Length: 107
Image (cartoon, rainbow, N blue to C red; front, side, top):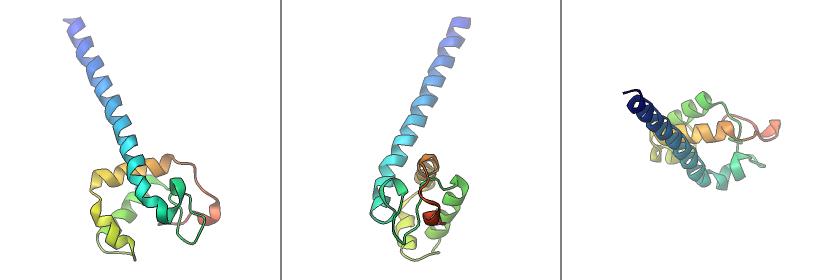
């Protein structure tokens, strides 16, 4: 009986690790669409805000506000993302090294 419990536990752990890796990969894939405006890996060098290193809850709140119509161009882009995709992007950018301080502004 204990071997069966151990086997099920190991399968659940493997599944969880696999899902976490898949979520990270999804965030990186989705972030590719952001590079045209927000720079490579979310590190903008121009007037557009950097996303790299942004606080996850702030990123999620801003994307949801854009989805609800706030902002300029982002209110036309954000509705294409569901909550899971926004969370994956938030995880990716929060884990990315932040850019220079002068470019770290709310998106």
